[in-house]
Image (cartoon, rainbow, N blue to C red; front, side, top):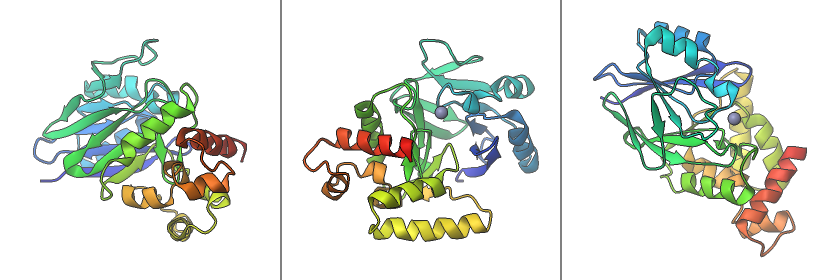
Length: 255
Ligand SMILES: [Zn+2]
C-alpha cells in the first residue's frame, strides 16, 4: 500500500504536511509550523501522529513541536544543530541517514544555505521530496546563514532526483516567484505554462503544490543557473553557476 500525503495551510503562507503509512498506521508531520491545523488534519483522517521530521530551526517550522509531542508522545527527528536551537529532539538526522516512519523510509539530504542546519527528506518509494525552505516552486529559500555556493550545491543535490518526483515545499510563494522568474526568462515556455497554471489554481483558491521536479528543472530559474541562456540574461556569460545563482538570489531579494 502506498503512503497517503495531505497538505494544508498553516500560519500565513506555510504548508503543513502529513505522510501516513496505511500498513502500520504510522503518520509523520513534516515540520510543525503550528499545532492547531496539524491536530485538525490528523483528526479529520483518524490518524495518530507518530513522528515529526523537522527540516530546520526557524520558528515557522518548529512552533508546534512542543504541543504535538506532549499530546501524541511522538518521536521528533531533527538535524544536528550545534547551537541547539531545536528543542524536544529524540533523533538527530544527518546526510545519508534513513528515517523509518512505520514502513516508509525517508532519506536525509543535508541542504544547507537557507540555514546551516537545513535538511530535506526524500521518500524514494513514494517519489516525494520535502524540501522546506531550500527549494520552492519556481524559487528557492533566502540564503540567511550559508553562502551562495553552498546553497547552489544544495539545489544540485535536489536537482539530481528523478523528474517524476513530487516537490513539497515549505511555503506558498509560487506566484511571487513566477513574477520574478519571468523578468529573467520571459520566453521560457515551461515557465509561461506554469504561470498560467498557477494563475488558475490561485483563482480557485487551490495550492500550487505539489509540483513535478521535472517541470521545476525546466521552469525554475534558480535550478537553471548553469544554463548559458540564464547567465546571458543577467549579463554573466561564462561566469560560474554559483556566481550566477548568487546574482539571481540578490535580484530576487530586491524584487
Ligand atoms: Zn526557514
